Length: 560
Image (cartoon, rainbow, N blue to C red; front, side):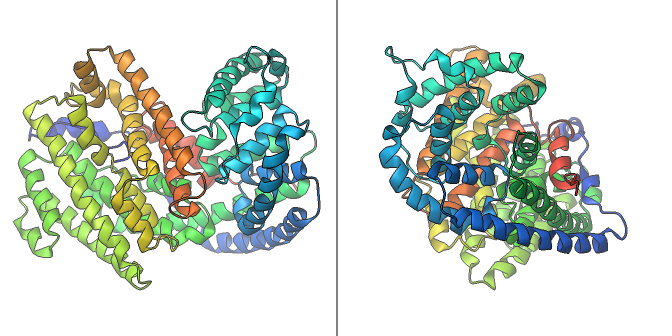
């Protein structure tokens, strides 16, 4: 499931050894608030909200005031990077519509430096405007290479590097820009001040376009504060708003932690991982804005249940038990509960039906029952793919890579997770779920590849140690007769193509609203954060703990 479905043994003897795979501790303590904290939280939230409203009015005046076009672009870019642009969506869209017509026509006539051109390019691409990439031709020499003199322009090089992340397949100049900037930034980092070294290092590790928005905002606020002349209004707004939204998220997480505890999973499903905090953190990564509070609640509940199902197929159930459980999910009827062969499966099946019924009632009140209908159908497909993978392991069968990928793209659960993200979003109407059902967009094809291959790369060493047979890297090595290193390199190439496809599908005109495509992009960013280096979902204390603490626990210090 978005990377945390991996194949273990599915025979009875495998149960005891499989449970140990999930031994890393969860971060459940982050979801518990101290006694009396809720009252203080409400008071502080109200106080911060009042200050945010005052500052928002000032920023709206800045956006509407007549000013230089480039200054307006840099203002919008700062609002995005500081994590407060969601407060000004209409104002920003109005400005960009006007600016795009003017700037896209006259970019070649202006003597803009590299940082300016790259920033303009980034802002428009970020918002779905098809800004042409040949605006960077002016920075090439007679031989067709980027001018070496640019290497001394640190801000320009960083901006060009960030701009290259928005490339689509076939934009060779941006491929060249990525190679050029990466080489020089690695060198510049060694020669720069501690502040610049950290800034460059963060960009190289995870560019803004691939970063989780709350993580990026928290990070950028720190960098922005250290700039020579930061805009104090923007800085104050960013700090107050971040802390205000964090308080809201703390309240939501506390409620979900209590809900999860009431499920009594620990006593019934001893093998299952408690990942309420990590899953809610993902929800914040998909949509952090206050208006999506209900959507986060719904998504977290649905994914918690999917996580328990995933662990059951992955780490505990015998193949025969899983066959019965899969059949019960296809029937989707409470009467199927008594036909299940084990008490733990009866408990899980009952919890599944109860949670889906709870959410179904919520969305039906809004006339959006189609959202849960699709989600239920997608879950039925997912568990069939889980069962096929369990059968491969049960029989010791190694499929071809093509055969593996046909099943593994489904078992990544990417489409189901998108559906669960969209269930609570009012913008996700019947047309959006029909788009999901058709599944023929570049974004949907790309996110399945991203979810699958990130996981295969991140978990290959663990799977190798456990002697698993039907895993992506091994299947590719066998089918194509290559080494593990060559297989991983091919997977990385496919990931680059998939990211480029995501970028292209984000360009206007779009088949579904931009708010929907932004969720798909945000899912890809959360996958990158969780699985780029290691399996961050299983090893959350090592990979995610610091990010979760800064986003959900630690407020930004504010000196009045």
